[in-house]
Image (tube, rainbow, N blue to C red; front, top):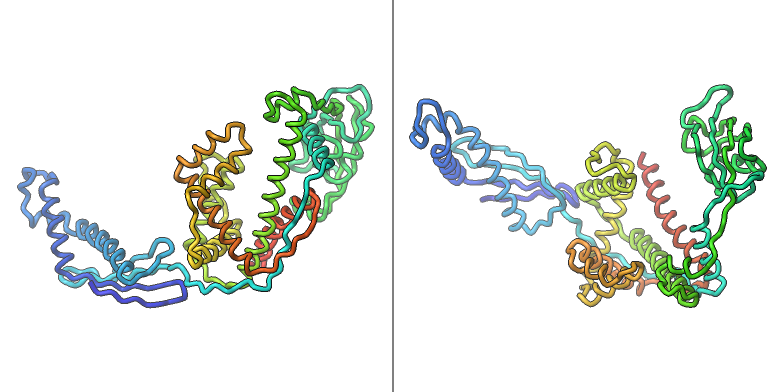
Length: 451
């Protein structure tokens, strides 16, 4: 076998491979002999068909099969001998494929980029610091009460915070517009789920009353044909219900996993969950800043094959998230909706993998178990969850990757200037959310700039 490798770009290689004609001929002859033993032809007993007939009837198909197999085998040998690290599958095409001549084929493939990591030294990273106060715990308990609130019908006009059951139909001028109607819709006034001004105009409305509501759709409304338009809604109110908040009694407390209904234990559990949220939000905020600095300091050629693989994964996640079913053909979803997010994820993954490699970072079994135990604390039977994580290879590898990623971020953080910033509980969560939103916006802007 003769191999030559051409570098066509930083991440693309073109391999030309020659396989001796004798090797191809021997493989074809052996396959034809096997075929002659197995096939049936009218006028011949099985196993007694003349080789000339077998070659005439099956020779080309057999050669095609053999050549295809030999190209795959010699491709693997070639990339092994040349120490190539392919990213994704190659494109393989025969260039010489004739009886009596050496087989020649060309394989075009992408390889993982060689990365020379640049330091993020000088980067300033803000690390939120927050203490959970008694007032924070009180507010969280109020939030939990609100989540379990019930609505009871009342015989009065609607107030902010009430829930109304309504039929409505929207009009542009005198013409109803698509998607602007519903029957028996339940709307909590003050939830800001509807167009600005809609909910406020239902204050004071009673069951059985009909109203006409005038609103203007926002200029940035997602339905372009409605953006900035003035509209009228014909609304009929069927029912007005007031919110009833549950008491923080033993029954309420037991619903949150405190089996004996003890109030002090409940507060301690709420505080523990809030501390876990703060820890996670702080880690996310720090990690996002570190990764932004890492990407800014390092330009990386990203193999398209890896982007395609990640895009496909994001499509499947989206299909699952929106309940499209396991049989849904994700190819129906446009690649451009996910391509930039996929590129960003692949680039970060390549850079973090290089950090892990250069610093020889590892995740021990004890560290993996500790992370599994931490994740399992939010479940009612954490011991069973931990065992499920550790016995499932896919879940265990996900935890291992998370541990290694955290170690890589910590290693990068040693290069940065870390500034602790005191924040309230709410501010820490908000800062982490804003960081996530900013990352999504950056991906969107990158997509727009390429359009």
